[in-house]
Image 1 (cartoon, helix red, strand yellow):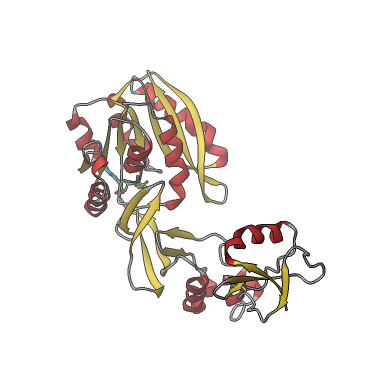
Image 2 (tube, rainbow, N blue to C red):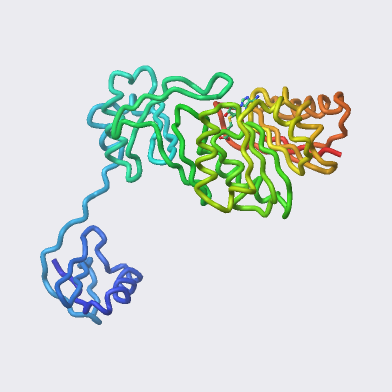
Length: 338
Ligand SMILES: C[S@@+](CC[C@H](N)C(=O)[O-])C[C@H]1O[C@@H](n2cnc3c(N)ncnc32)[C@H](O)[C@@H]1O
């Protein structure tokens, strides 16, 4: 085929020019010898500012997609049953396999493993998040036989076993949203802190002076300590406590500028613990899972509940921060306490 013969020192400049003029044949790979690089060309119009020679070139391998691989053993209808977006925690890909396709689950997992650049393990969910610790069951289907991984979020490393602690990679943007609200020297309480994603992302991205995390699940707390201690700068700013917030919060005998309550479904049950430790003018971020039609009413219910407990509050923001199921959202109520 016709290629442009370019001295090595001009490689970048010439590549940009050929690309800009639409003359580079991107279906083939460039090749080199000791002094030159050879750029494959589209043959309809050849550049007149470079030496053109004939040379055998290697075609680029077309990237094999997961759909290409699955189409070898699943029908179109079966492929449509597989959710389009799969969750990835560190290098573990978490598949949701519909019941009708369980008989092909290993092949499906292999297809995901082969077509992914980053996944080293593919698991399927065997049980949804449940129980007091909000943990879930997973089973390894392909790749390395492990459930531990290190997830990188907003410059923070989070090591965990994905079956022993709750963690959702989909909350990364929400954690950054909260970080943007934090002012210098704030003191923050993160109830239900898990393996410490909120405390550590806030520590990395804000000038808060202290971020206390409280977590009941000892395994999750142990990962939190490991994650915090990976970075010296977090050690003194992020005290982490293993215990029940109902017992540990009153024991702190402290007030906070901001209290996070990331325990959707039952956060409201802990408002009596959170409200007394918020400084005047401070904020509570309370999370809930709600059907779209109930979001406004639930906001009012929460305000009524706070007022019944004798606290003057104002709902300053209601944020949808993820979809949980059709029409069901994870919602954060930002509540100012006077
Ligand atoms: C939905 S998870 C959130 C974990 C973490 N904040 C995150 O975003 O990954 C809720 C966490 O609250 C913990 N938890 C439940 N009840 C608790 C309590 N009474 N006191 C402290 N932690 C509790 C669970 O073990 C679980 O790790």
